Length: 277
Image (cartoon, rainbow, N blue to C red; front, side, top):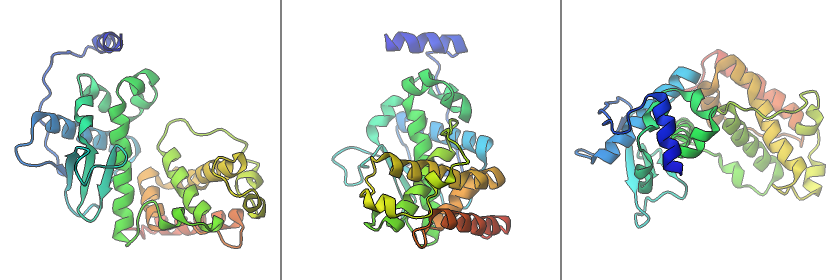
């Protein structure tokens, strides 16, 4: 049934189900010499998604100092990623699970050409999940490349801290980074900054700052989104993500509200002066 739905959708778009995919070269990514056709097709989609992101949101990976190599690992390989993909900034290598090669079928390239239409079509997101996997891998690579240039990791090491000030600040950046590149933004009352930027963390600390707790989740996710929104509006997603990857967010004196305002002001100065690399 799913195959029939895909065929009908592709027919409606005027896509030939039997059409061969042409080969594409890229200055940013590379694969091993004489790679099989499945790997070359996957590379094409990666390149197309990079171009789609660049056109929709601004250039990513423009400061990468070298080509990024794509690898495909099976479960027996030491490099097999825990998630669908993993990036090693020390080797400039982006590794995907090899099984994903089979996900790049007919129709993927048609939907890979533009960034937003894919995310606005829930049917296509369900039928062609490899596009979102590739996007997540590209954004991850952009963030990790930027962090690596400053001797940092992404996510920042504070995300593993048992100290609520360190952990929550890091998690707010991660949540804000994720939501900033999605078309649907969380809805909430922006006048209630006291809810998602609390002046005192004692309540969260008393609740055990459980990640499943609704109050903690609102600060982490909504607070992180609101931290990023005004910066994104001024400077765009790629540049802001590059900045946060290189600049951990520290909550000072248990005061999230004051710390966010201070972080945003520092970010504006740095981004306006183009003082990031």
